[in-house]
Image: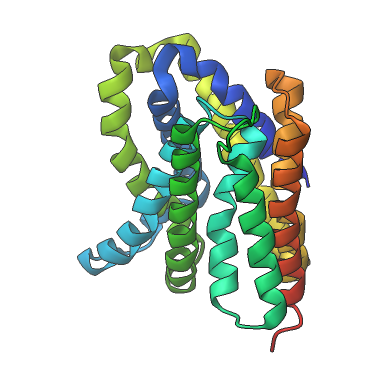
Length: 270
């Protein structure tokens, strides 16, 4: 829970950088400082690396970078909690792909119903910006790839996969950020703010999640992680004064219920 709160509050504060460097520049700054912190903490240079390691790490790092970029672009036009809820369809799809139990189709229908409430139905005043939804769905697809390839590199490289994957993600996003923001990325005040954002939204959550994974069953961890849209909505309300309608709250609740149900049901699987 501490990881979720830290991540959501840090991401909410990251939106304060949007007027100065845009979503692309904000993503670049966050990844640069997150990479630097992970490099200093884990020191991956102590391991011997080969060119053969580049492909699996790239398959892990590229989706990570694109996921961050698309998610921050989504935050430009849709509320934080709803962007997280839409993005959650990615890991939910990965979890459902591994099972064919009849109960799992209930979670699929809940997720579809939740997404349906976000669509611009005729006469609806609560429809989200379609471009923002597209960015969030794209981030969800990248999150699914990140999970699939992340499991492979984690078993192969252990904790060293995180800084190397983050480095590749930074190299992918940095050209986009530099093109959009230019010299504004090197403003001293913005760099300090970005460092704080990286600490609160990356370094602290990563450390807390590693501790949680060592002391909690995976299904319990997944159920708690499913609360992220609600925590994101609360952070968006407190930090950004983002208001959600009853229909949007219901849509978010349906997707969260699908994620919680899928995670809880996973412990029953052999």
